[in-house]
Image (cartoon, rainbow over all chains, first blue to last red; front, side, top):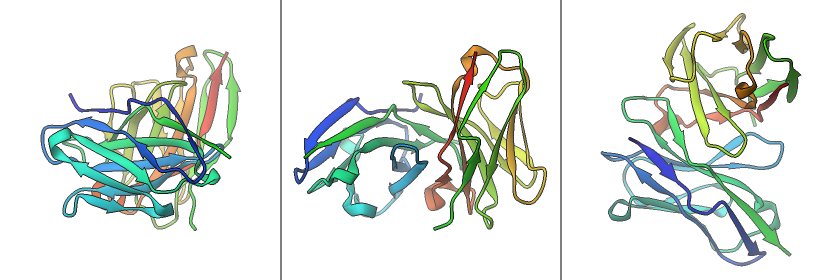
Length: 114
Length: 116
């Protein structure tokens, strides 16, 4: 069955430090992969998506993610974290056999220390 | 930037009561979705809606759930007889096109439903 795993429930980084949020997926073919961010009281905002082409994808707010088929991973990175990046981050994969259905991971909560 | 608007932000209801969660999608979007997130669990797909009918639904979306686009702007989720396990955050989303790999979604900020 398709699934998305985000192994880290909560991560704390210092402001200015680099960030990597992990995402592993289970999918039989080339997946469509997404990262969303949810700030407190806000909706889920799309950061970036991948479905073909260059495996390093640039997104909004200075985020990037790299698709690694051999590792079934789509990790999210940012070279220098800002306090405003504190939020919950969700990885998702497009469901097989569905054009519009997304399967989400449980999310990783990011806290940023001053 | 266009937004998906959900009301109310928080609703408390008694078990067995009917609730209607409301959403105003982005005006030029044609595809509409409901997802839910039970506290501490994953965001789960409930239903997608296009051209005034359900295009996909999950196992969660049983007979107690229904969706409607009663006018040109609103998109509603009705839960007929709420159960304690329906307590969750419900997200509405809309999309310009039906292929999520091209369009992604725009999500609303959610309605937190608490069933007591």
